[in-house]
Image (cartoon, rainbow over all chains, first blue to last red; front, side, top):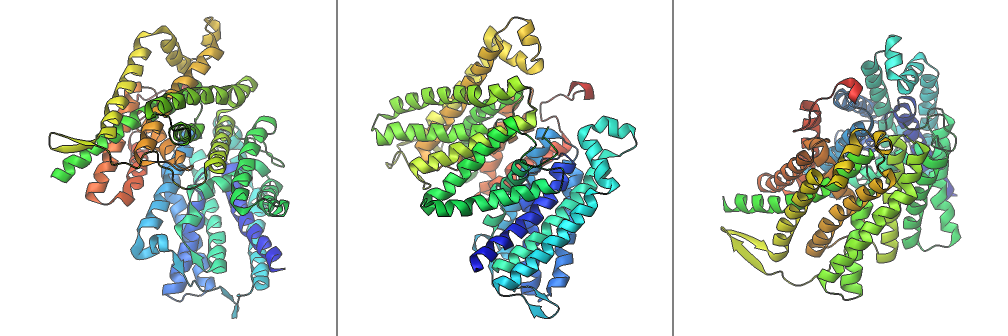
Length: 289
Length: 293
């Protein structure tokens, strides 16, 4: 039972990540490869504040969100001068810089040793320690993030992002300022990405930089490319597919050493095939340009 | 001071290989307008092809390197015919092709890991003979890397300037739609670009794996180095790729002197961010009008 609940918790965490990345990739058309950096930022802010300053969950969560928003804003100011491949390369650069800092700033992050003994979150005086409790907590957090995403996606803000994504020059003639709207999207997307980071750190109670690598960012982007983006159901479909597939492969009887590589090979082939036959992904609205 | 000079020398040796890697990425990016992520997979493929011939089959390193080079060229052709060409014919966007290229790299990396394992493999366990040049010590393989890398990069530069086929490849990047109009064989030119790119990635791959070994996930590091070099130098000039690659490699090496080897990636991407912010067209690039982009 705990195994199934653990999978559901991971689905919730990646559901939040995919929903936040959807605002950038799906609605804004900005293929970011730096989402794991914001995810990691949330996790480290929670770990450091709760471990060293004994801050409660409800105080650390806004701090993590604010840190995500602030770094997202600063990053957006620089990276959003570019589009297409140059933007992708800028996001990769940012992701690598964050990873190197997390890995090497041992005085703050303990580098490759990671931070252990992170306290479980406590909500209304109740400490969330068991897997079923955490399942409920993750589900609530997921619904909150999903709710925010749904509200955003139905707003005029999302419509303006879609207009910019489809034809930036035409959208500008309608009075939509691209830079301002993209930076807003970056701020909101980064802030929302910090929330699953907090949940992850509180759940596993140990974090190290290897959870927030470029490969993780590529995986998050792949969720949206496979499932689809630009609507609500695409990212969720991607999360279900990408996270359930390895679990299904466990029951096929492949040895663990091979299963991880086989899963990656399937993801890679799927990316090629989907991009050719269905660039919008399984259930998405937006095809990458 | 001696340490500084030695690290500077090591940086130039690494830069010689980075020249070829940058050219490998740059050719495909400029001539075919593909952000060639699969280059990381080609790098891994070349490393392991060399390892297979040199260690598993016990061939001498020269023959193994030649065989790896041939296989790498064939593999480059296969990527073009099986992946890039269908997307090109379909008129897919550059983003879609880039993601397919990412898929190729993921598949190659993991197939390699399945066949050879995830652990580091080495080709040679012997101590390399070394020579002292002007007070700096270089191993034999470092000298091969230095002169081989510079000779290959310069040779290809000369071909681009003087040989018609290579001039056409360069021109393809400017206005690809004119290539069939001029009666030039577009498919063949694309294959030539991929073959050239494969040679430019296979040579450093073989020399690096011979020197320090390999693992299946090493490709991303060299792909990033090559792509940053091209963008930092300027995407539209061959010499600019070389400048970007050499500057990056030397800066990485000097970071080891001033800070520590752990911060070299920060230097790479710090340089990228700084150049993108201060000189988006690259060090030697020329600014384009909006309608040209």
